[in-house]
Length: 125
Image (cartoon, rainbow, N blue to C red; front, side, top):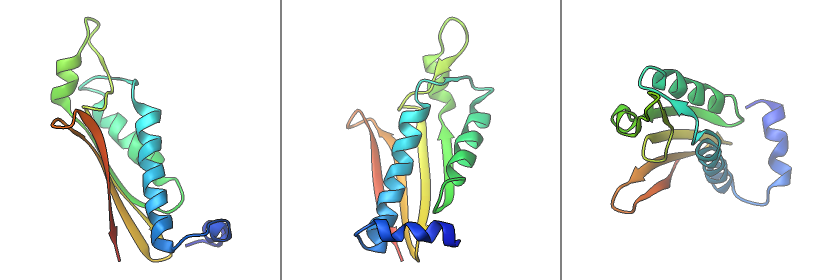
């Protein structure tokens, strides 16, 4: 970890594991609230997935990210002009952050039984 990324430690009064969990949650929340509503087609979905992944990887502490956009949901939501807007039902995200040796893995997936985009966290050592 670079000195620039570790200098922020003094501003947080929590364990490294709690900080990793916090960072993972913030990243998922940012993805969810930044990108919902963006126009998408089946043809542009892979580009949008990569763009979200790469922009998330540029943030501090992120070590991996995988974004999937459901082509089936895009087709189902397509409007008369041939595109859809990204919705919570389409988006599936897995990412991991590492903070001073503690790794938090987080996922965002729409859960039909709850009719809600559920975010989950799993800590790994």
